[in-house]
Length: 261
Length: 276
Image 1 (cartoon, rainbow over the protein chains, first blue to last red):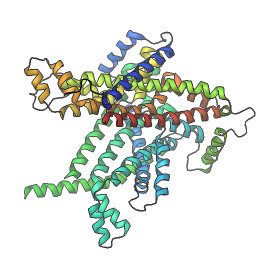
Image 2 (cartoon, rainbow over the protein chains, first blue to last red; image 1 turned 90 degrees about the horizontal axis):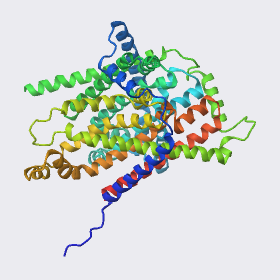
Image 3 (cartoon, one colour; image 1 turned 180 degrees about the vertical axis):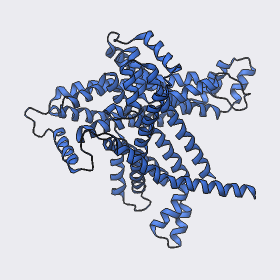
Image 4 (cartoon, helix red, strand yellow; image 1 turned 90 degrees about the vertical axis):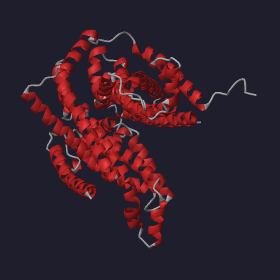
């Protein structure tokens, strides 16, 4: 006999809880909002869309934006070079593939969680407040949380490897270091490269907004144009950000396909 | 034979491309360090002395009055702002999920479906634009439309993350079993009904999972977006830093980390619940 009433599944409960949370959040934000602000409304929106459809394309301005794009790309690559090295070391420690000590693994995981818990621009605010405004502070601000997330994700991936080749190497008398390089690394290399390419894409987006703390790059050009309410000039660097991100996305997909074979 | 030759040459090209990486990194560092600076470089000891002073001020050293973290009323005020930030992150995630869900039937091409749908290209292009432009830039733009305040922040978070989720949902829809939707269509259902009753129930678990994961990212970003739109905990953090109210900064940072960890735990619990 079919049950007259089916107990709601976890999925239904999770969905209902999420919907309730959204309701409460909207009530709270409604209380925060207060009277309508001093925005430009429909008129500003129209000019914003017009600017998106006809961005500034004079050769001189395109050259300026290209130089800004190079600066943003340089911040992203420099930050990723630090984050990759630190993240890979942290991944090896956190996964315990080389040296399995519970306290070391746990300590590494706590440090990684702490670096990940703040957004890169919050780190940037802190680094600038602590050390003064310098380009290296911008690089560190991106590198610290990115090392945390790379260490976490690749550390989890290192734990998921097939143990058979590693055990075979161990049986043949290989040292822990050669077990890592010949048993574990070949298994994770395609995934790791793909993930690092994705992180480089994120780093480009983060580097583009380092103007938040007063550093140069595409975001600086966007802020400069918006201060003059010149939407056509604002959209050129926005589209440059888009191009950089799409380019890295495409390169990452290519690299992953190459290594997947 | 030929395939092997092509494979070897492409492997050689890949290796050559990887050899370029050190040069790219070197050039990037050279360009970054050539940027103008208004303070000492972190490579100089002066920078680390400044950092040490900053850290001791965060802990309330050399302060004439009572530090902010010893005053319950500061905690109460900042905790209230943190709740507002939590509400903002939930709203941003909900807006993004809703926008992605409403547009994904236009963007995705279900398996074995004939190549139809003129809007597929434009909707996917919108996802790429929304995703490639950071939340902060959307906030800078939208603040000029709706004025400073929570509305601009919620919209900025919603737009960027709708692009991220739209791409993920598209992949999910394209992997779905097409038979329930086709059966509904055979029984006379329109495309909209076939999606909501045939496809949507299949993608719901993954939609919940992806949205919850995204919520964890969004709560970290909300503070920064709020700093741009001049509302909530983000604006308070910026104000405290520029006003050199360092012990207030400590309170805000503690609440920020607590909020992020709380959302990680809540999201994990809801994901486990949704899998049950």
